[in-house]
Image 1 (cartoon, rainbow, N blue to C red):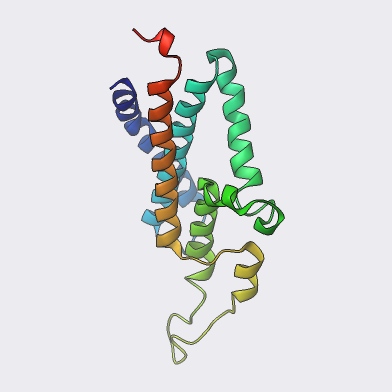
Image 2 (cartoon, rainbow, N blue to C red):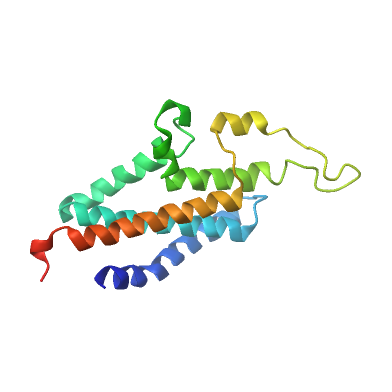
Length: 176
């Protein structure tokens, strides 16, 4: 009950954080990706951050949670996002459970592939515009925006369930 109420109370904070990050970016940068898709990606990123913080807070003493959360974010964001270390260089299952990897893949498709893969208008409408096969193979990105964001939501849900299990079965002696 505590976990559910705590996470419910943090949902508005998560949406506000994502909204203001999105607002700053759309006023400064031009992107071919639909604005709501960009906002949804930021919401998923902040949801993952909040859920990860909950999971870490159940496993670690309070004094170490902040520093470990930074390390946790660096671990997933730098190592297993699919951009820094290639998926072939390591265990692929770590990439499969990495929400930043799915977010990067979704943004890659939303900003690079889908707007420019086919000619959008004119006499050559629908014809191949750029051949993205080599880029897709290099990053091992082979889904689309919707599928990638779906996987990101599944990863967030799995970490949320992991947090529920941890709060239920850890530190039982401290619970009244």
